[in-house]
Image (tube, rainbow, N blue to C red; front, top):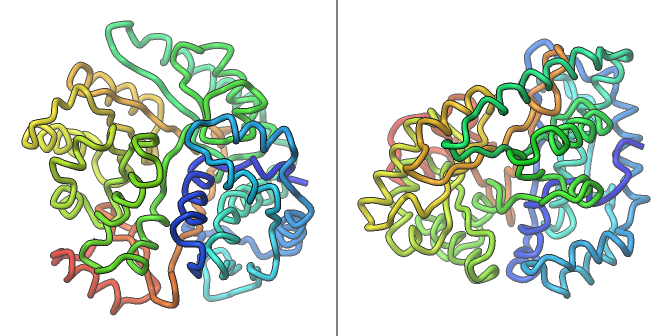
Length: 393
């Protein structure tokens, strides 16, 4: 089995799932898989992917895993009790050949949000590992270790005058579970002062690391269908989040509707309420400059806030960003595929995105080409109109 624990997922799946349990327990959703890499054929591995996903049904949270989750102050006891009863149900997921889709397979997850939210990360990790263990059955691990060593050498060259830390955000498109764990153990051993932790809850537990994460686009998108008014979907999402966590997990996500719409909604109250903002689209230097200016405009010292960068980061880019913003704001860097799938082979760009909530389309409008998500062009046009966005992204 590729997935051996229900904790082998990102922390923000649990933090969002707790909000779903407490605030939206009846919500119904749909997620859709996309392979964005051209020339990748996943059809030979359909059966193997189905078997690995089917094996998820046999997993349950172990007592020590539930105790670990219960140890976090922001995780409520009733949510842990619910997880003690949780099991995957394959009636909520369909995996089939689809010649119309890039990659040749279609994966659709549909059902109660509370019972489908945990599918995304293990499904992506399964597709990635199945693909690579078939196409690279004898991987050059030594090349991967040399590449990792070069990254570590660059990290060590960052002077003490620069605030700098990196985190592992690479579960979903990792080369394999074994390589993922080797990477984080190596980083912990070699550069502990620079390694802040991992988004993967299981590997954090096994390796005594800090699990990291707050919320993802799916939560922001779902609020388009769950809030009282579409134009207020973004502020509604932040208000509900603050209601649930009361000051914990205070990192906002800035790119569900593009940066212009985010800054219009992220007023002085939200600037002061949230600890920082995560970048996941468009030029990171420009984004950081805009956030610093926005904080200053709202009479908030940007040096007290954290800018988290997580969009297709590499170690050299993270170091450049840290030096650029040093002393002007706190910074942190979540590096994904470049850490967990850099053995000299081209990773596959695969995603699972929410496309529907409570029977209506939901969408993400991105400032980066190719990252806008929508299954309904008419709804996307309407959403742009509602948020005052006149150009396509």
